[in-house]
Length: 263
Image 1: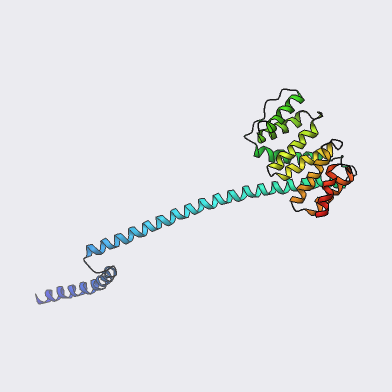
Image 2: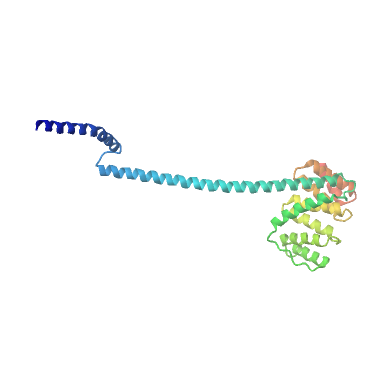
């Protein structure tokens, strides 16, 4: 009997010795949460776990929102880059056209490919600005349609519609005697809108294609004014000198001389 009792006592001692380290570790983990009952500590652990889960969810949502903003900004950058390239290309084509005006012997000859490229650039720019401006229906008569387009300017003050109508008119009636006037009107309308590159293109078209038109001296002078306003002094001087040389007896030549004196 005594022997069995000792065996039981020895077994119980061994169990207590094995369980003691585990109990101590458990006590440390629970006590690190704070004081109170086991239920309170479990509740505290649940709150901490829930708070961490909520914080993780918020961080994930913030990352998703940031990615959306980055994608949106990337799209805007690509669009702005494309528009900038278009502006640079129009500037290049315009300067090539101005060079041909100021360096030519009579300013009336033009490079067909350069005109086509510059015309396309101006037409593209205008179409983007006047997408909502519908041109009036054309009758098939050049004079009637021209007068209708001019009436949009002088009577109705519908300038965007006038641009659309005149652009359609110059394409439809290339042999009309009103071509110099129509191109001059387009140059003035674009100038009033602040579209100086497109304005200079149409003014230069008057000089290059219709050098004998009464509109040619003033159109060339206005090309020089635009170059001056763009702070391109060298181009402005060259154009003003060309006005004086090509149209020496015109009022535009007198104005060009005054401009030259101030440069």
